[in-house]
Image (spheres, rainbow, N blue to C red):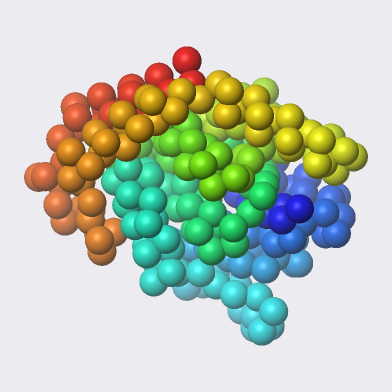
Length: 245
């Protein structure tokens, strides 16, 4: 199977150093997460990611992915306003489009930041997903939306996190569980998710997105905030949340 590992920057990401590379078709690091392990294939970073934090002397076998590539990928799935303007979602939709995975496995992407504790593997970082942003009113809704689109593409999303709390709604499995009997496990998880997700409500949510017409081809939605109604996006989030009730 085509299993893609997506690594974020929480302290939990460091556990992935123990996992054999052989289990993954590709390893995708988000922003600073290229420091977690040196066998990553892609590093997806935001446009404002500081130059001094970029990987240097990158071999031809590795590639940095910038907005020139992930914005068109986002647009295929409805655009950044509906996806949610945070790098976990941005990266996931790029992976879904570019790498066509059977499984997207996440670690370090729980988007949970306990107070007075180390929040990122490199220290105390800025919690990008928790900033006040009209596109990020419900991270759970954005997570459900991602999984709904993944399911329709034949891809199963799983969370390899060891944390008890996560903003991702995906089934939680361990590395051992994922690769001990991967085909049977993923087939079972995929069937369970498909059964849980209401196809009619997914269609309603997609149609509502079309009606709102908040598509911004450039991805620079902050230049069009006067067009974006927070209540309408909140209501849309509630619709996505109802997809798997």
